[in-house]
Length: 488
Ligand code: NAD
Ligand code: UDX
Figure 1 (cartoon, rainbow, N blue to C red):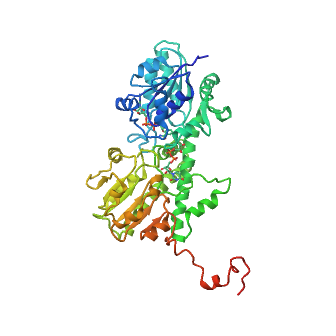
Figure 2: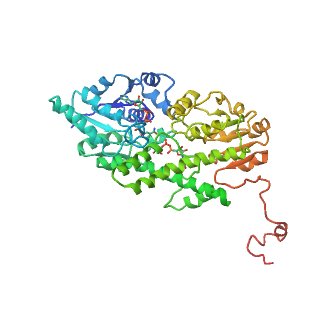
Figure 3: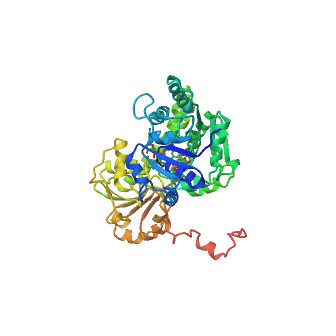
């Protein structure tokens, strides 16, 4: 067998960085090298300002960096020296050619295969950490073995699938205590080498092994199922707004059913992030490739519902503001796709801000972590033009809200709950509107201040003082009615 002492990871991104830092922390006997062709990223991994924000990450990196954790642009050396190589490169949706807008763009993962073929000096275990379509491992294996055969060599390459389930914002905790680790492969010895690495901190019964294809597919399905819950509850939020039901109450009522479970039932302005949409579209594409049109249409609806949620939320803002936001200042609280991350990939804020700006609004964003450069990059990636006179990033929430017609909450950052909204209200245009795209604020208290509040999946919001709707005669009759003893 292989005596493992050195690991290399190709791709120093949101997954490669935190995952390898955790392995380095938990396995002091191993040396972990993360390589990336992006020089700027590697420079930042080696500095005090890490390229990604993730609670708890800096501490782990500082504890291990220079000891058994290294960041480098030297891909060749990384491959030569390692016994096992993780591929944790990006696998975005294709933007052109066959399968455009749905299929995964596998050029980075293929380039990793070819690079390993070029530089590998002995047999290696190659691990797919990236999220990939089913049967990608087979393609990597073919690239490696065909190149090896052409060079007349006899090196062996064992391919494993080891998808990552961490969520951003909680990555370090998710890695520290995973619900499960999934390893797919054909060679039991190779599987054991990787299982032994995780067994340094993950209980053995949480290390699941499957065949390669189950593992690859499970990752896509896990994300599709999670996103499906969000789209399902979001569709109900629209119905609640029409009927007087409250989506939070509905979520609580159904979530206590142990078969449904309480998590991932928060109605929102829409899900974002680099994974959900991309992975579902990929699943849709795979279904289509196998002629399963109905299955494809079923999952496509999860994405369509999400797009509808974003536009419906924004339309409601524009309608409420008397059908025009032209030249109106709108304060947007939160631009990241969820709290505790600076990541803006596929954030719902993109579509909301774009729609508001297309209608002439001046959008003032405050986000604790997102910088305008990253937001502009994301707009550009989606071919959305931005006039920088219309998109302003404020240094404080006060600055964003000063003189605004409306506050729009798009990310559930904890600090948004702690603000003195009365002081914001005093400096806003009247009527002052507040749209809570995360259902996270105390709506009755905001109504008391004077805001016109629109929350997701909730009808008109009453002030906290106006709570008791019980007519006088009932109160006069004592607690009789409420205890069931009252008869007229
Ligand atoms: P990322 O874009 O943050 O990082 C990928 C890195 O790979 C980049 O820095 C890029 O420069 C580098 N790279 C690409 N090709 C390379 C090559 N040939 N040689 C060297 N470096 C190369 O991406 P990410 O968010 O870390 O995602 C990586 C994979 O993990 C994706 O397949 C994604 O679907 C999956 N995933 C992501 C998350 C998440 O929360 N972001 C969670 C689970 C799984
Ligand atoms: C997701 C998966 O959870 C993770 O397992 C996988 O490895 C990568 O993709 P991530 O995208 O980082 O993780 O965050 P997640 O917490 O899943 O949230 C995704 C989006 O759904 C966010 O925009 C979030 O705000 C939204 N969401 C989540 C809701 O709108 N409502 C919910 O109840 C839960």
